Length: 371
Image (cartoon, rainbow, N blue to C red; front, side):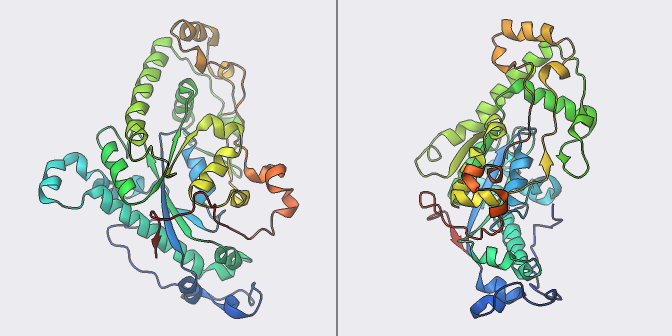
């Protein structure tokens, strides 16, 4: 996460003190010799904004990093910027505290101001990436192929950023500002509870390829039925309150600006990642570029995690929640399009792909602004 003070975004001196490492990595001719600030100015792109709205332990960090952690040259993200920037967080939640005053004075509410600042943080990051692209072999050519740039943010639902107090205002402002939205949720609420408990017991939120063995995070959990039923009930109601404004007009139109994704779907197939890429307006083939260094954090089955599993299972079945039980299913890391040879070809043929064509069905129009 970048440490940025968002209330005032200072302009960057693009390309300053950056020298190409031993000459150009681009073919000669035309604009191919542009460097630093010149390249950033010449190839600034139209802009698309998007938000991932999800609760914790739903795969939102995995999806956010997959889309925006430099694996796709056309996409960036401010990540969970409201978590680290308290000034921006207070601005985003201002309408909770003083809605009457804001309406009376006709002032621009804090959500709208926060969205503009998040946009500016992401734009500056893309300009910086463009200005330094010449030091990474092939990156200038890949950025030149971007039909536009996309910048996102991850909003925590229920617990922090988007709550039942401000969700309608957030939905209205996102629509008015032309943002696209990925609504991500975990439908198996027993697995969600187990993941939350596991995080508390191990202190590990994520598991990266370099420094984490998922099996080292194995736990044994004593989960009483009353506790599980209370958790399932609370999260069912909470999810409905957060989702309801996004299932109504104008979000439920055929405009194509919202994508509903399920965590379980991402675990089984790569299509959800492709759908997210297309939501932003990129072609399905650009999803073949996406890579990530985060593994599935929980590697245990329900039966392995839950002490006296059969007792809990009987209670959940009797309470009408048997659909959440899959005792011996072992979670796996989410598949990527790049691992699907029928979609992306063999890995040996993926490195040379440099095109980022528009998806003709979801290409940006009214919800796209020019930098």
